[in-house]
Amino acid sequence: LTHSVRSGLVSLIDTSPNYGDNESEKLVGSVVAELDHDKEHPHVRICSKFGFIEGSSLKLHEETPFPDASKFTETCFHSIHPEFMRHQLEGSLGRLGRIDLYLLHNPEHFLMSEIHPGTDPLASEESNRLVQIARSRLLERIKATFVSLEEEVKKGK
Image (cartoon, rainbow, N blue to C red; front, side, top):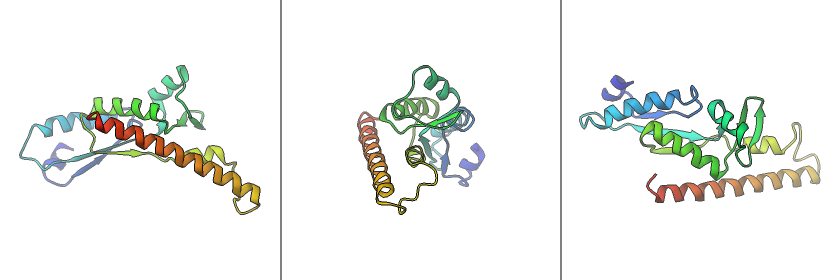
């Protein structure tokens, strides 16, 4: 990875706390720390994301549930709540040192938990109304998370 960045082959590294239960971010962070001190290499952008609750985050969630978490599988939940975003952001910044691009990972999973499988929004007015309510709630959640993320940026994160 270090060689690929130094040679200009890599200009963006996309990672996540869920890749190897934080191990990917730790590896990328160690490479970035080394490269950020070397002014002769091309600058590499770091991208991470949040949303999935797995691995060590799942253990924390089992002890003290994160707000608005949707169950995806027995070993995977999903949340875009500002509290979970801040938790993930702090952890990722600690492992990576910096983040240039931060993504909201698969926010549509909220819809999957709100809309029953096989629901056709065109099947009836009631189905359409329920789907529209779920979409509105998703947009409200996304907006609240982006507002909170902007507050973190203003704090220098």
